[in-house]
Length: 163
Image (cartoon, rainbow, N blue to C red; front, side):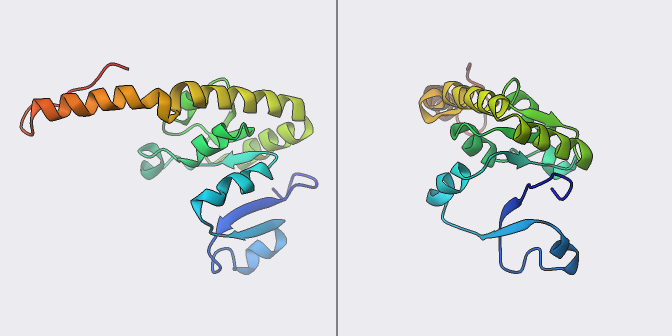
C-alpha cells in the first residue's frame, strides 16, 4: 500500500497486532475487531477490498468467507489466485499471483485509478454472489445433500447432490 499514492490500508485487528516498529512507516488504519453485523458499514467505506493469500497448505484448503461479504456489497475485489478464489471470482475481480506484492499493488492501483472498472467488477460480483452463493440459491441443493446423507446412514459411501 505504501507504493500506491494516496492509498491507505484499513485492517481489522486486535490492539496488539501491527505494533512492531516496521509497521509505523505504512499508511495503516487499524480498526478494532467488531461485531459481524457492523461489517457492511466498514465495507461501504472501502474503495477496493484486497484478499491477499499466500500459497500455503492452509490457504489452499480454506475459503476466506470475507470474499462473499465483499461480493454481496458490490465492492471491487483484488484477490490472490489460491484455493477456490479463481473460480468464485472469475469475471468479477482482479486475481493476482499469491505472494506477489507488486502485482497486488498494481491491481489495487488500477482499480483506484479506474473507478468505473471497479464499479463494473463490483456489480458483476454482486450478481454472481446472489445467483450462486446466496442463501436462496444454496438452500435447495444443500437441503437435498443433507437429506441424501441422512437417508444413506452413517456407514455408507458419501453421497453428493447435483447442483
